[in-house]
Length: 307
Length: 300
Image 1 (cartoon, chains in turn red, orange):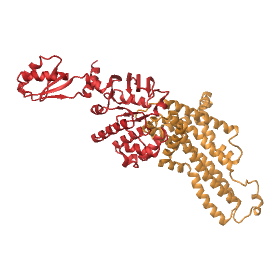
Image 2 (image 1 turned 180 degrees about the vertical axis):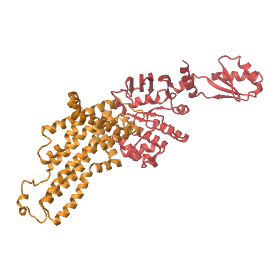
Image 3 (image 1 turned 90 degrees about the horizontal axis):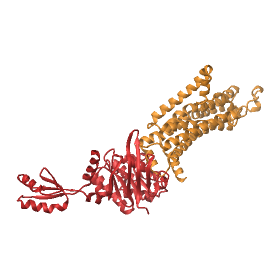
């Protein structure tokens, strides 16, 4: 069994004169839930379209589930489920009919499997409703049902939660987690909702302007990260506290609305607390702000812009 | 192969699910439909009042005219309807996003375009068959009228009536040949419209522009062969490449009448040449469409 589900190497794509993908390379490991992040216009959707076969691959190398594109596309796609942004099924057909017709293009589908997939995404009550009457959240979920209908080993999703309300997003997250654990499916999804990706994914690929800015396991990416701490204290101690903080190395601070914001490694916090108390500063709270993908993301993508 | 069949069934289902399709089938066959009704009325009337020489001649003309009119009208209006049906199958599917749902499945692009082409051909065949069915019914009614002419027995007819008139009005073989010609001639147009519909995302705009170009080309052909060719041979040579000329050759009134009278059949070199060219053009358009479609980017 191969280790990488998707291997993209030196992928290039231009629309007219605009270069959208610039030697993009990344790997998606098997059995992971991987996130694909990037600011608007970074080339996420284009990359996914190339992976799904909607935009022909002209320059670069893509290997999915051990089959290299474009030659092995049909063979690879039989084991891949794809959920496009805003899935559009036939409006006049019911959910079951749509899944039957579109699903039969992969392999023969049974009615039980269709109902099972529909139940898995929580659309049991709407199974015989016409697609035209679905809300956008339901459409998105039917898209996922279509993606998993043929029990793929890899599921690729483009913005699965776009246009959904918060409750819908939570549901979608649960659905994806269930698919990952119950059907052992590797999931690769693009999203611009970073907190969601952080909660769901164990691996991320961050791209910016057609290049890979960073890729790796979420834990690894966050571990090298400087954490933000907030020290709350009465205003009159501010200047005194700053004097104390100046004695520490590898520390940055700024004034926050209700105290000082520090950026430092977490192991420095006990020492700082001790020093502040020793200087008779009445510290009312020392609050860690959990390291988030968002900060890493902004740092990575804005660094690129600086260059 | 199984996928191809599923895709074909799916496409047929999509075409026939549209109300438009039903309307087209009726509109394309309006001549035979109306004629059937008229002939039935005439039959009832003749049966009670007898059948004379005048009526026979009129009937003969009417049924011949019916075939000519149907084939001619079909060849004129079929392009308009075909353009819209093809626009729906391709252009509308691009804009609605059905196409992307098809293309993310393991089916290959040439399979998609082939299934769509074949389903449209089957739709055209259905339209032609429905017309053929009603025309056949008309023929049976008309034959009944000439053979059981009311009170008069054939042997009782005056001498001058009993000569050289064929016992049939139009032979079934001639009718089938004409309908096959109608089908084959329109294949070329299907190819032309499919090629066009790959570049548009609206069925209406696609239909208008492709029909305009088709009419423009044909006007050029007519002007070049009738007038400009006399000034410069170049125009005559250029006009030979206007593919729509095979349509007007195929459906020329004189040729339809010859086939109706049994003086010509579609295996004669003259007709075969037109049919062959029209198949060749259809194949060319299809191959071009496959080539273009396989490189097309689906962006929304």
